[in-house]
Image (cartoon, rainbow, N blue to C red; front, top):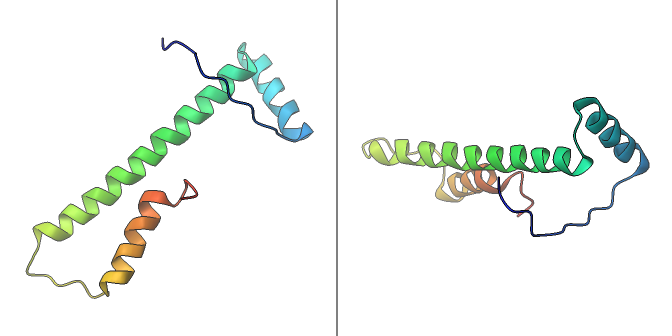
Length: 89
């Protein structure tokens, strides 16, 4: 298990706090453990989204005889959405 060495303070509303506490109690975990799991899941999804975007880009590169029907600016915007869409970048 990784050493927990960084503190993060996040403000949430009362409803979310109560739901987190209830979930933690139900699962026999701390609120911090539940939050860390949620962060891990979100980061894993972001990584999977980037991998999928790269796969689509490589598929296009592997077929040089097929010209894209879209303008490069549209293709680039779509790739950026795939890579950064959920990260607020």
